[in-house]
Length: 399
Image (cartoon, rainbow, N blue to C red; front, side, top):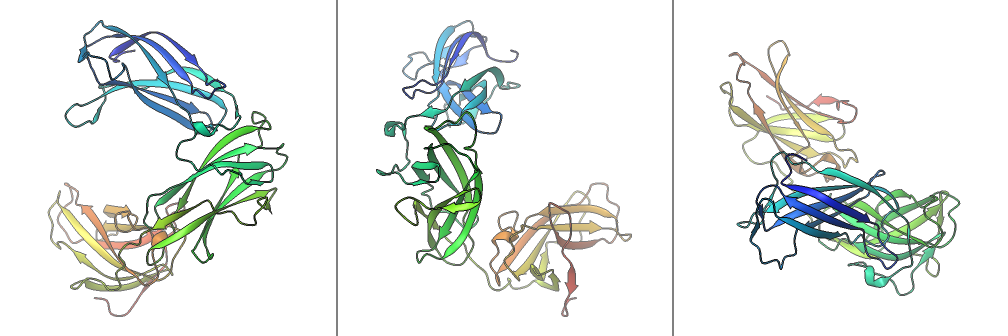
């Protein structure tokens, strides 16, 4: 299709096979314009319920001696998608899109106006038969633990050290060992070195479906958020299964630990910087405004003023509230604003540690058409889901 740089003259899709080879796309093409040697095709398989499989592969093998392909050149490509063992069964929409890499810096370059095109749909059936050789970096226990109708064949926990609030990814490869008759849920818990429960999250596992018969393999991916706190910590990851809402024990062991995660703390300030303008006020039970800095009190239309607010955390809320900064005229009409999570999104309130001080920068763009006059700045917190604002209590000591 226009404005694609190649024509697809013929193609064939094949699903994965019993030996574990992933889906394959056989492709015949013709160049519409001159193509650089490092031309790639992005192959994507997208399931209706969310899971996606993706591959970026060169149009021709890397050992090809040609440095470019003139307009009219023809070729044949085989794209083989090595889908992870346990990928979800179902109907996948197959799309492709060409792109290239710049030789100078290796950056991906996309042709103007080129969009992915849907090629076809591909039905993938459930995989059966655990094969250790098809695993990547997962850990596969010699004696896999079982609980309820599932056996944990392999797992992988993020190994990179993270900061509080950063995502932690856990992948788990399950085998269905008997018919699933009731809802199954997974809880992932983070425990301290001494066994104290620090945080936990829970998901429903989609294992009760007709296209997952006994013996099927299913891979699930779960994202945890590293807990907040002071100091560096190492946490154990403990999975627990629930069947019909009731916990089920791992056979042979009361507790299963599948890995450790390392959380490196950030800097915590206990005092605001010197030279701030005091403006004490309390915002619900979340924050106390200690004061602020303003880059300029006189600005011209089109310029930017930067307001930095200095908060003290009064609690450790679970919710992430947004800060608003409103510039209003003498009648209270809004003329400019800036809304963001605190510290330009880096430190949402859900990561605050009680007692620490957070400096929160807000650039305010002054409209070009704003008439001269005296304007006021108003600040506050609100729930981004409901719009409800936190109540404000003014404290003594302000200007």
